[in-house]
Image (cartoon, rainbow, N blue to C red; front, side, top):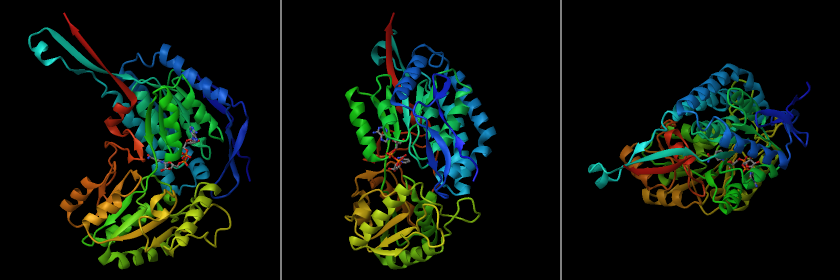
Amino acid sequence: MSEPLRYDKVLIGGQWVAAARGTYPIIGPASEDTVALAPEASVEQARAAAHAARVAFESGPWRSMSASERGALLRKAAEKFRSEMNGLVDLTIDETGAVKPIAVSQQVGAVALRLEKNAELAGLLGDEALPPRELAARGISSGLVVREPVGVVACITPFNFPMTNCAGKIGPALACGNTAVVKPAPVDPIGVAELCRIVDSVLPPGVLNFVCGSGPDIGAALTESPDVDMISFTGSTAVGSRIQETAGKRMKRTLMELGGKSATIVFADADLKRALSGAMQVWTFHTGQICIAGTRLLVEASVYDEFTAQLAAAGKTLVIGDPREAGVVVGPLVSATQRQRVEHYVAIGVAEGATLACGGKRPAHLKQGYYIEPALFTHARNDMTIAREEIFGPVITAIPFRDEAEAIAIANDSDFGLYGYIWSGDTARGIRVARALRTGTVQINGAPPNPDAPFGGYKQSGVGRDGGRYAIDAYTEMKYIGWTA
Ligand code: NAD
């Protein structure tokens, strides 16, 4: 085996400096080998990175630049990333375990798209005239609503789409004139280090900072730092609520993109073949490690047995294996811990009396790697743990419903509210049900995702909205300036 790649530096105030606590190993999910060494920063370095971002915000050129100048630099960062991105695919597969098509498109390709999109966002930051109506009509007074950056944004991200997620935070944060400190998930931070290297190379020093570590203390130090004004967090609801508590003490702004337990609702009048392929997609995509997965599969009783039988049959034919191999659909989970978590929930599902219709075991032909066969539970109820808690792996819980009202009631009976999927031959009904769901997004009949749309969760799935121009609300303060002659 070749020597693992060594990443032992963090980025503070425009300088790559040695991580104070050395390095820690990054374990490849497919090989279980050390594929890289990642920088182990100290808490003091996390604080120093936040302070460097503060200095760059207060006295650097970034915040006072015009939005179009910032947009031009973000476009340059996107171009630079595009020119280097093919070289990052192997690394991404190594550390995340993503199958190659996902690594190429959603893990790496999506980063360039996100940076480009956010370069456009800078152009949307204009002032809005808002004179007091009565007085303005008489020429006495006028007013403006202006958007200003929040300040220093700590961008704390999860493991599933490390670079894409990071780009989705630094893009709007920087476009709006903030400075940032990035803190990726411990298990796969190397792509994010590369992304930060590329973006930083075109920015004034200190605008973008990067710290990394194997434990929660680095993220916690950023959350607590008096230099941080806003925490843009994507991750679990448990960690998100801890961050909210800390942030609340100083009234820091937060954007919280958290967990989900979304419903896929299949009505009997749907094109069942398409619905089946939609259900397969959300079941197996990135081995179920996706926040928007429709892991509660609600199927109208009249077609429940047929639909779930077909799904179980299709599940058994899924090609599981080395993420680099052509034709492989399901790669490994990201870590041993994540696989234990999935196995734990599979055991709970069986103990609670749901039927394990397929999967849930380690594939016999794969001796190495954190693989698990996608699992389908049938004859399940919405009060079972496997229907209530986020598993974050390829496990679907299929629950029958009698009619539209019951489908809506079951879908909404959840602590989460991130996404919803509806399959019906009646679009009017689809829209009616979509309006009734308490979730941030609903897709009907496999409608494609819309990058210009707002994205975020209801209930414990999050606070605030990302996505397209809607991100401006999260990453800016609004100021009203009124004047009279
Ligand atoms: P996680 O909550 O364990 O970790 C997320 C990040 O928080 C990591 O960088 C971690 O190091 C950091 N962290 C941990 N403890 C911290 C603390 N006390 N203070 C500050 N930071 C801390 O999440 P994960 O396991 O990496 O990712 C999976 C979760 O992310 C799932 O719940 C999934 O639904 C969620 N997710 C949500 C979205 C969304 O857009 N809603 C997208 C992707 C993933």
